[in-house]
Image 1 (tube, helix red, strand yellow):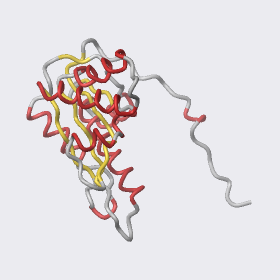
Image 2 (spheres, helix red, strand yellow):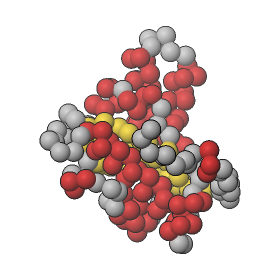
Image 3 (cartoon, helix red, strand yellow):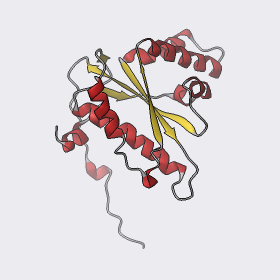
Image 4 (tube, one colour):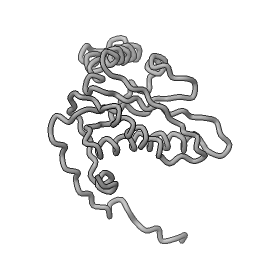
Length: 188
């Protein structure tokens, strides 16, 4: 697949089935992530793979976090939290590793980690792997961070769900670029 095809036509694929990406495909996914723009070569990211029974444990962790946020949380919300990681055979947790640095602010490091996540999505699309980025408020819970073993200065920025598309991915919508791009006329 041509790089421009992936950049121009990648879409989210939310309905995913087994099998999960192979070891060879994962090497490409994470290799693409490592090519994210990264001032100072800090590599301010890391990844956790969650699959098999660990997805159920992740679901319980998310349900616990929901209960800590609201002691009267509904059973429907708890079920949604528990079942979230079961949406795909592989969940990749993207973690930003933010470091104090004189030259490269944490905001740039966070953006770089987001670019690494996007690299995984693009590499998935290029290999015919279905992928969708779903995070939600529970991803930012201190309880979830502790349960996933995050260190100080680390934060979850993405749950990437990956697997085999249940059906053919939709065609990317064409966008009117004029709505998003304009020339700056210079200082008045």
